[in-house]
Length: 125
Image 1 (cartoon, rainbow, N blue to C red):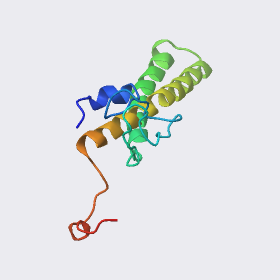
Image 2 (cartoon, helix red, strand yellow):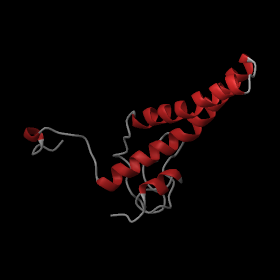
Image 3 (cartoon, rainbow, N blue to C red):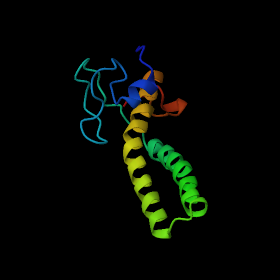
């Protein structure tokens, strides 16, 4: 069991086991295993959770920003739309791999797997 905090390793995009190896081999594709400790990332499956968290967080940041730009600063619509679109795209691209890594690190820490019915628990795939 790792002593590495899931949020720290996730934000750094590092292996949840050793905290050193890279977690991704490309933008959102998990590496097959850690280059530092050899941990197998075959169970890596964060599902749609990271996208949902990122949508909520980015919306909570960009919508108030757009209101401030529109009503408090009275900027033209095209500027508000441009800034809001750029902020949405930039924040989403930055946050998505980090949230995916955090959710995987939490899965790793808690040894989470696919849910099974009690009747199927004794059958191994």
